Amino acid sequence: MNGPRDWRAREPRRAGVIRRMLPTALAFAVVVAGLGYLHGDLRELLGTAPGSPRSALATHRVYDTGPVQARCDTLPRDIDADIRVTLRALTGCLDRMWAATLAQADIDYTPPEEVRLVGTPEEAACGIDDYDWAGIYCPGDRVVNVLVEDRRAFPIMFTLAHEYAHHVQEVSGIADQRGPEMFDEAWSRRLELQADCMAAATLRIVEPTRLRDLRRLAGAADGDPGAAGQEEAYRQSHGSGANSARWMARGERAGTVGACNTWAAPAEQVS
Image (tube, rainbow, N blue to C red):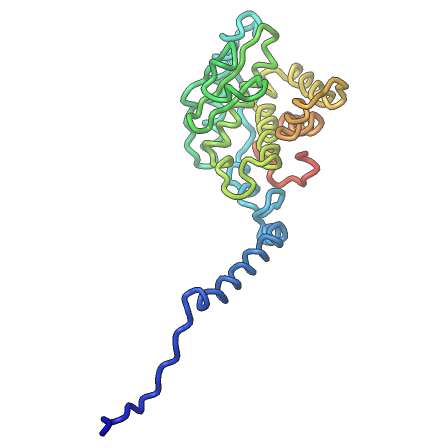
């Protein structure tokens, strides 16, 4: 005689892990693909794309500061007599200018860890293997490097002021961008053209005539028939000479960081 029959209904077999996760994975893939396809439009809608007046970089509080107090009374009478002496004097003035400017935005300014005046690129703290440069900023170590050559002082002074502007971008958080634009060419051009503008703001009273001449020279550089691949690569990462001259002019006229807001500018102004 058989024992009592178990009348409980059997539970259906559970689907395998892969079969159970597949619909969720497919839905996730569709969402990711959609976001990738609409990424530019979505970022523009949210105001996070470079060139949007609502982006965090375009609305940074440093743009509300007044004109940079661009005086440097410690410069030698003859700036060409000893270029290193001139650059050391300008370094102190740039520290003073930017400390006062950033204080208006409640940002603590700290000078670069080092200002290295080098005779060859191999002496720099970074960028040793990069293509030819007149100055370079090392954001990790916060070191300003300027190549000192046997020529007129003012172009080298502008290089120093430009690299100092990169330091200000780092200290203020302007350069602390995270996202897909980090270190691409469009991001780099906005950063570099802003540094040109900020450098002009600091030198507009120091040497106004030479600054104007340098700006005109930059604007004429695009017509140089000798421009080759290296110059084109520089243009892609730093912007055209014409746009550099335009941003320098903005720094000259207004003397404010707000006039140098490349992050709110349309693409054609930072190309």
